[in-house]
Image (cartoon, rainbow, N blue to C red; front, side, top):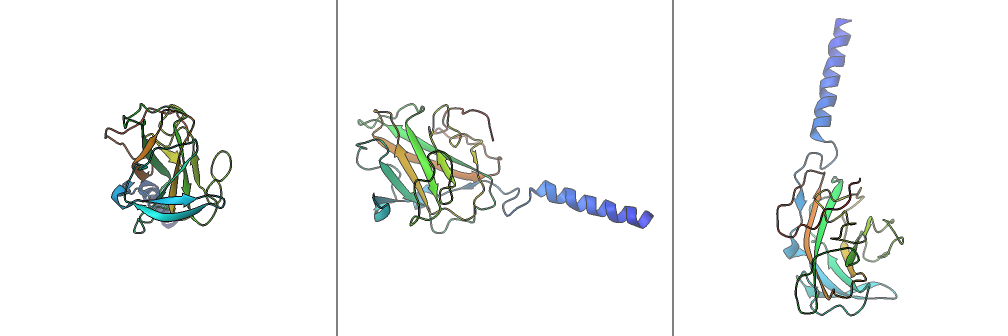
Length: 204
C-alpha cells in the first residue's frame, strides 16, 4: 500500500507541475508582440475579394477613407512565430480625421477581421468568428470593444493567420486608421504604452 501511495504522490506532483506550466504549445509563454515594421499593407479588389499589389510596410492608409466599410488589408509577417498556443490576442488601432488629427476612440469607428487564408472568405458571419475568420470584432477601441484591451479577445487558433482586415465603421469623422499593436498572449499581458484604448466590458 505504501508503494501505491508513493506512486500516486509522484503522479500528483507531475500533474501539478504541468498545470503550473500552463500547458499547450505556448503555455506560460511570454506574450508575443508582432513586429509591425514587418506588416505589409496591400491593395484589394472586391467581388470577388482578392489582394492586389503591396502598398508597403505602412501602418496607416495613405489615402483618406471615402466610404463606410472600406477595406484596409495588412498581411502578417511570413516569419511570425507559431502563435497557435496562445489563447488571447490584443489588437489596437488609432483613428484620425481628414486633417490628420488623432481622434478619441469610441464605438462605431472601426472593426477588424483576422483571416487565416487570404484566398478564402474575408467576411465571415455577420457577427463573431467563422471557419476562415477566427476573429471578427466591432467597435475596436470603443467602450464596447474587447480586443483593444489588455485582456484582449479569447481565441483558439488552428493555424497562423495570414491577414488582418480593418474597416472604417460609421463614424463620419474617421479618414485614416492606423494599426498600432498586435500582441498574442495568455492573459499575462499588460500594455504600458500611450496607445492603450479605453476599458472595455468584462468578459471571456
